[in-house]
Length: 324
Image (tube, rainbow, N blue to C red; front, top):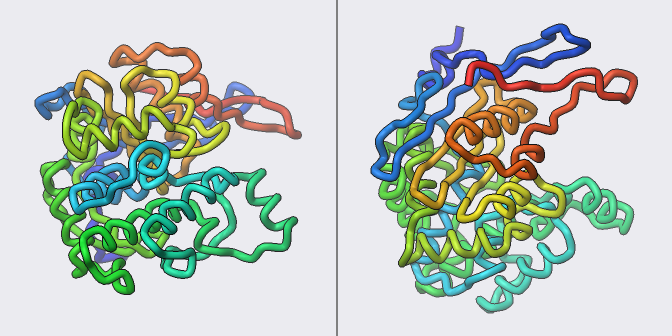
């Protein structure tokens, strides 16, 4: 039996989604979701939102705020790319190179894990062209390029920028504490090689509410970049890109292990974590929560809810949110 600590957000997770095949519930997904008010109070809680989770890539807009506070001068599409888990389309890679070039650096300075592009079409094209896995193509290259650019702006060492003791990572930890309200209960290595912070799920919701409602400062700058350039945050056809584009004032970021965070223009925040880490339930659960709090844009909700269950290549069911 494992003696590792387990978050209450996982152990107390209720069933929030059914996997339905031919009218029969084949599997279930447990999870937690929370909605916070502009003042941070909990408006809706499903499961225990006080437990810590790794937000994974949902942390990127928070990390970008720390970079701007440290002196990162990019804006618009380049700042949106700093917040991204991009699909690796040509325009994403051009922007990542532009961030590096603006700081007097090149792709060889990147330390994120080499990989193929995240998007299906971009990945197939990359492989067909004979390219190996590269850091520039990996979905976190915008974040890492921006981390390097922030280090150059602040006069910090670029060779050790991933070290948790590096001034940049210390600044990110301070910003995570500031925006989420903390505590940070663990720091580990994310998939891309940078540090990642475990925070309460409710803190993640509060952070996104603050981002979405900010009118001045680095928070507003990051939120504006995301809203104006959602294709740089995700990519063509991605549900997070469609969600941001469809709902006025909304900011959002998806994350690995089935995390999703949303901020609404009025300052409400939303965070979802599916306990088993499987991504297929994340969209339907988030859509149900958003609908409950008054988000009704059909294009945005349809992009999240489209999770068909296939039989012989044809839809025979779907993943459906329950109890929300």
